[in-house]
Length: 163
Length: 104
Image (tube, rainbow over all chains, first blue to last red; front, side, top):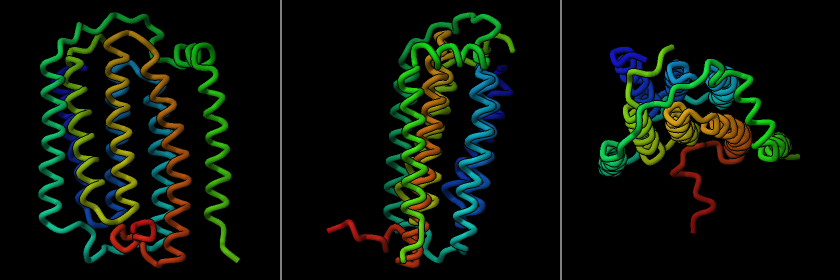
């Protein structure tokens, strides 16, 4: 991915991420989240991760955010009077967040990364991902199905109406 | 697409910025659903790091981890939102300041 394109995408991503945490109406926050996830999918495409990019759109932007929107609509949340913490706490949190981000960026700047390794044509495709998933990561993959089953049962049990 | 002209460290820096934004969201917001969305931001920031480093090292392992992170995020969202629905039924609020039953 060329540098100007990356900078535009990065600026848009940061702007939509800020929308998520700043906007007082949860619906707009959810829409900001959708936009962030789509922009990240585009960045994934630039990093030769086609399969992950498609999964990002289908699973994250498609399923998870729709779940969020469903709950927001079900609860009929209005813009709250006091949707944020006290100003001193916000200042402290913003300072802490900036400090943490700065620290990580400092660590990244001081680390030497080698040039990206040239990869073969199928890198990041369905076949390459599935080949790893069903050989080296077979056990974690099967455990994931168990995790999802537990999550479904848990969600149903927790979400049902009390008698 | 050709081998990225953008250095790997730039992707990691963007990931760090997104992670910082998500952290500030978790700390400052009081609406539980928005806190949840900020947690999703954190997960996605880390996913970006995984994909960038997978590309840089020429290894598919990072992308496989992202696949697992997505599965865990889906499970987490289903259970978490069910808890919030139930909480709203019982307490009529999902403001984090007013839900303090587990605090002593």
